[in-house]
Amino acid sequence: MPDREPHAISDEQWGDAKLIWDFHLMGHEPVRCDAAIGLGSHDLGVATRTAELYGTGLFPVVVFSGGNSPTTVARFPRGEAVHYREHARELGVPEDAILVEPHAGNTGQNIMFSREVLARAGVVPNRVLLVCKPYMERRSYATARKLWPEVEVVCASERLEFDDYLKSIGDEKLVVDMIVGDLQRVIEYPGLGFAVKQHVPADVRAAYQALIAAGFVSRLAKI
Image (cartoon, rainbow, N blue to C red; front, side):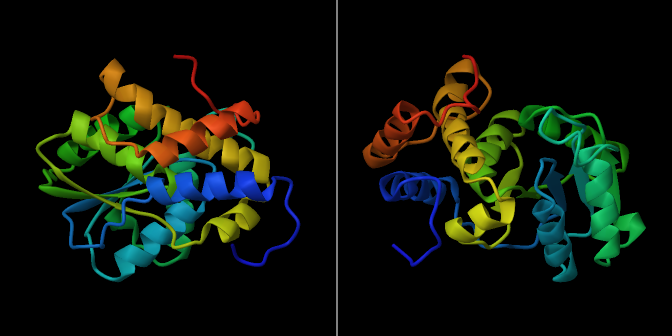
């Protein structure tokens, strides 16, 4: 375990959360795609990473997708997608390379509504790059594979270590809650028809159960 400043979570909980964090990362290598979708959230780093990847020539057009949620309305009062677009423009992404989808309220809507926006713009992709929060890669992938199965899906996120991400957000309990909540959705959503099923290793499941027992439950969905 790396040297780090004192945390609000125990070393054992940190280890469990790190294990789940690593599982959430798909490990995809960035490749040329026909379009990108920046999935809205509280994390402006999604727009930063999207701008970085655009600058490498990986895709010609991006849809920033997202309205608001209780966790983002204060930070992004004009909507997640609008703030993402503004940030990407500041980082050099040209206006004509950005499409905005300002209504999505969940990951499924991010995918479906962005697909519609791309179609209206005349873009029918064979391969799509999903840019999201690091711990959301696996769920985003599973959702897109369910709702858009004919498209090859590649995931990307900011290249941050777990400890650095905790520091960047500034609320360790919330980050661990969100990591646990995303894993719940990876496990449960296939049975509801929202995502494709993925194997979850036994040690990841054990870490998940331990963190739930320890009270990291604020982002669990009521399923």
